Image 1 (cartoon, rainbow, N blue to C red):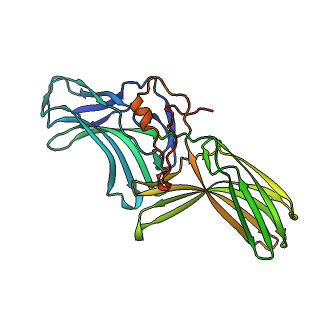
Image 2: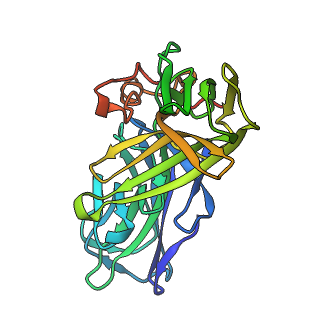
Image 3: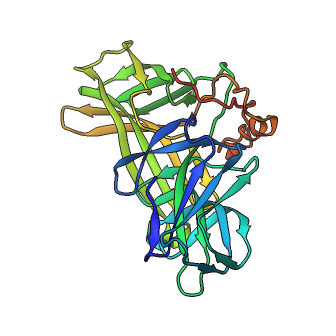
Length: 333
């Protein structure tokens, strides 16, 4: 890990205890690039060492205390001056005094609540990080180390299907049906489109997945729509009684679980968008919201019972429903 130094006084570094064995995952940064970060789940303990290295041996370093913090924070890009912290834990490592030699401090945050998925969007960023600080009278010396958090859930296999009708009176009447309304991130969307009445010349039909990010409240509310996927599922004019099958694989796309009203700051929702285009380039469309969730696999033996209970959290509480217990290891298939 790189060091952050202040002048020629000291360097401070944060090293996780399980850095050699803990999984890393790619996560998008604010500039759109991807970096790898250590992966944690809700309820897991975060422990490690803070290394303070004096750059001039024999020279004393006076300080007002040394501490390490675990922070969960939301930053709205239009309000960058304010960071909204939903998790803030502090461990004091040393009282005010002086260091005469380099020193290592152990820390442990036990069964840390990490209720939300790490997220970097168009107008908002939700991040978790460790911050080690040497407090000084003039300028503090600090180092931040980001981690990534994934939220896991598990829903039963039985889901009610989505069936909807849409049309224009005396011109078009179609019925579309999807096998379910909740999909894990590596699932397959299966459905059918039925044409009950066709009196306009349909040229082709496409289906897409739209991600909608909503930030802020009241006059400061912003919506950002992003088309994640778009497929043409029919080319040519359909006839009455015809049905078009749909099969859309989600594993190839970069998506997060559905996030609803996260800390009353933002939401991320996903919609299936069905579009019909006629010979005169008129577009007829219908959107249907779907819920995406991250699927858990086999329980890790190292995971505490408290952590496994904590990992049940899912951002579907808006509707009052709660998923069955999540498992504490992410599915790899």
